[in-house]
Image (cartoon, rainbow, N blue to C red):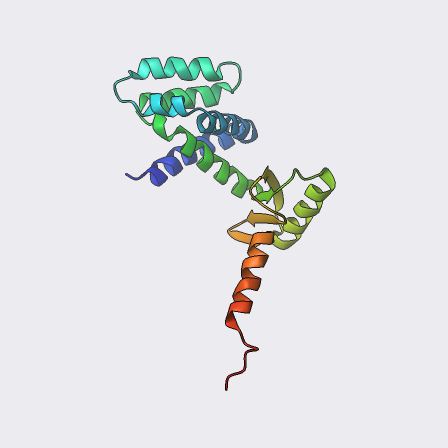
Length: 185
């Protein structure tokens, strides 16, 4: 079974259980934490991927990492994932859960990349524009890219608006390369 199916199946099971118990929003916050810890800690991924480390030790690691930080439902689910030898998929499962949660709540995830940090007024403006375009509530993640010369890049709901200076210069260069104004004698 491929990783996408594994991630989605486990995420669906957790989502259905959490919604049934009225814990969907709390588990979403827990999954944000789990996903960020897995993304930021390469060693944790190596440990989870290592089949020679016993499941009991991995459960202990999960317990020490997330104890008193996640709900009982989430902790039980994480233990279950580890015991089923799926701990290597923990980050993917958390991302799949958050995708299901956003779909159920009518929320679209947007990524804004700029050269410098964006002030709150600009964030609200971007969120309002995306909300007007999609008709959904917006969860905006903004990032800075020091390699970006100017402008911004906005991605949401399988769309991308690229207003980077580099892109505009490339388009202008392509227009000049056509050389439409050259005499064709």
